Image (cartoon, rainbow, N blue to C red; front, side):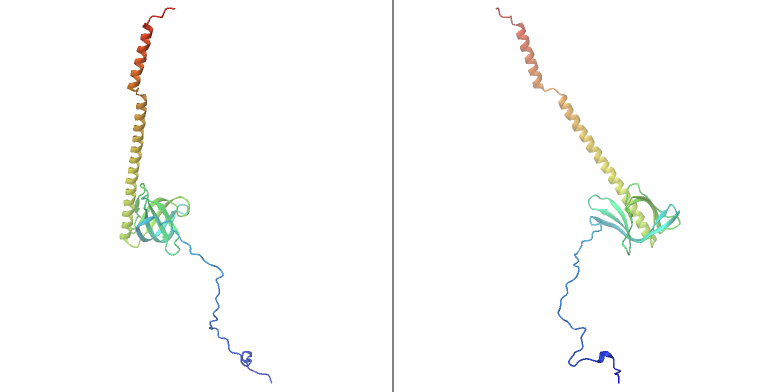
Length: 218
C-alpha cells in the first residue's frame, strides 16, 4: 500500500532539521567596494541672502503662453570674494536647476498684472547649460513673500550698479595716474641737465682760445 505522507516527512534517523537563522560565523566580503565621494554644489563660496518657497514659470514665445519650470526654493547667493549675486532656483524633489542667472544693475522686477503674489523680470539665464534670454514669472504663497522678493531684487541690482560705478571710477583713476606718470617721464627726458650745459660752454671757450693763438712758425 502506498504511503500518503508528504515526501518532506521522510527523514533519515539522526538527521536534524535545518535552522535558517543559525549563525555560521562565515564572513562574506562585498563584491564591490564603494568609496565615499565628496559632492559639490558650486555654492561653497557663496552666502545665501534670500531663501523663499515659490513656483517659477517661463514665457514660451513659440506657444505664446506661460510654462511651469518647477516648484522649490528660490535663493539669492552672494559670492564671498567678488560680491556678485546670482538667482538660483532648484526643484524641491529632484533639486534640478530651473533658474540660474546673475542679478545685474540693468535688471528690474515688477508685479505681475492682476496678481499681488507674482512678479516678472527679464534675464539671461544659464539653467539649461547655455545662455538664453528668458521672461520669468514667479508666484509665492503670500503677498508678503512677493514683496520681500521684489524689494531684495531691486536692492541687489542697485548695489551692483554702485559697485560697477566704483569699479569704473577706480579704473579711470588708475589710467589717469598711469598717464600722468608717463608724461612726467617724458618731460624729464626732454630736459637738458645743467651740468651738460656747463661742459658744452667750456668746450666752446677752449675752441675759441685755440683759434686765437698764433700758429707756430715752421
